[in-house]
Amino acid sequence: MSDLKILVVDDESRMRKLVRDFLVKKDYQVVEAANGEEALDIFFQDNKISLIILDVMMPKMDGWQVVREIRQYSPVPIIMLTAKGEEQNELKGFELGVDEYISKPFSPKILVARVDAILRRTNRLDLERILTAGNIEINKVAHIVTVCGEPIELSFKEFELLVYFVENEGIALSREKILNHVWNYDYFGDARTIDTHVKKLRSKLGENADYIKTIWGMGYKFEAGEKTK
Image (tube, rainbow, N blue to C red; front, side, top):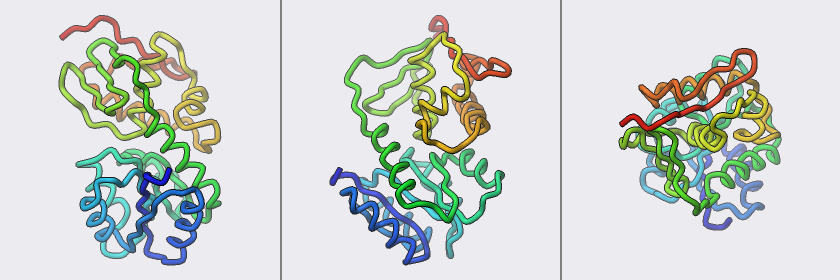
């Protein structure tokens, strides 16, 4: 894992050191930033950042602004750290394209477990055929999705969710099952996380949004049908 680099962004040096020490023990490379502006400078200068751990409340530029800037150019996985536990902040993070959300205080071991889980999926190579479903084509190796031949930008979690839907086309999937497979069994979130990501995914699929069908009281089912364009 020594080639995987993580950017840790927090205005508290003590917090950065705590996170860094636990990540280094797992052989990750770590770079640090003390504020949002510094984080953006580092990220856009270094094209080998595999994941970002990002605090919300920081001087000069807060975490939300950093996410907005990065999501214009990159689907790099982002874990948000915040002292606030209000539901609206968590939903705001997911709407912006955050992949995980951890409230302070947290267990460094749990944080590293989240990092491990995301990077295992991000760097998992599947050299089999490109997935196709109706007007959607997914290149799992290159992490590229096209709809009607046009590329669309998806966050890491949106990409994983779409892959899971396509690989289970025609199967009714409960929210619990989706959480277990896409967010890992140890993800302590709730079903609204899925609904938020499905809403965002549907909006990006455009005219093909109805591929993802809601099964009321249970979850979702993906049915693409025949290619139309």
